[in-house]
Image (spheres, rainbow, N blue to C red):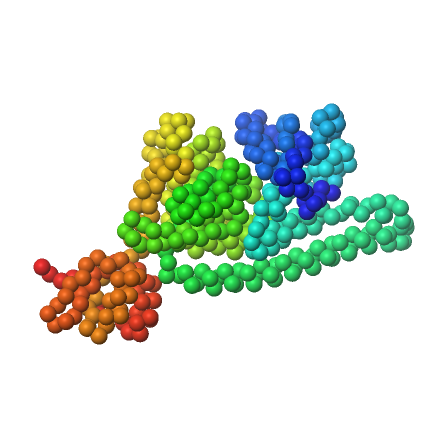
Length: 437
């Protein structure tokens, strides 16, 4: 498609008038398609478009040339002219040929949901890692769509048995794009290796990751729990980079809480692949908090979409707590008993008002303590450094002093934490039975 995402302005430059298009292949799914179109309108708004009209087309099968058929194409062409439309956005991903045909027939730039999401990611990316990830995904998306961008040259020059200037330019464009993709993959692999080393440095820490549909309230919850000051606004994909903060539990223990990029239906596969290193934070987490926006009318479909993405990442079996957000809203409060019964072990909260946050912290603590075991250690008078380290870095439950000058310490500690402390002290700790009496 000739619609160049790289030149798309950010929303601050003013909205561009757009037309949204969806296809209903099964009349029983019309309500689902309409809901998807509403989400597409939100995506378009985030990308700087103002959708002035949404159009649906009923078709049993997709037209291979235009996706929607020639009759509907003509209707959209006329609508675009009458409404002074600047771009047409399809809810489903178009093939390169379909995009080119539609642009030629409608006379306006044409893009799809994937293109819009990539556009949003392109100007939302802040860190070096996010920028590399997004550029790689965009170039992979644009590479098969380069054909035709230089067709005006081949029409002017070239002929039978000749290599036209357009063909030469197109080949050069493809070669440069492929070279850049290879460079970005190497750079992303370097970043991934660095990220692995950083995570290895946090191996002893208990890690909790916030996951969920985009705009479900993950960043707001992160701020409420840790005062992280993460950007939180009522727009899709407000944040892309994984943000990590220390979170203190009621017991006084500290865990690492990570806010990750939000998921969405029809998430472009190139983005899932490109954001592999960021999503590794989800894979490495001990516990997932699946945040759900109960204020959204299709929250159950969003749960399914998130679970499908988690399955794609291979973490669907990871311990997960369902966190139902926005329970302060009347429409959510009414359905809460049914939801809590359907999802045992879930927690109801309002990240905005703070309701339920204490229960959530206690739930995280329960999972954290399952990773640990209770042990008694005996230390001699000369091992005061080990005792001090246990007090500073472990959950000390009780301390007893023997007449011999030895100290008995009862701690709740994980195997990794114990191994690290013993290595720091340079010797193993003497394990003893729980004292009687």
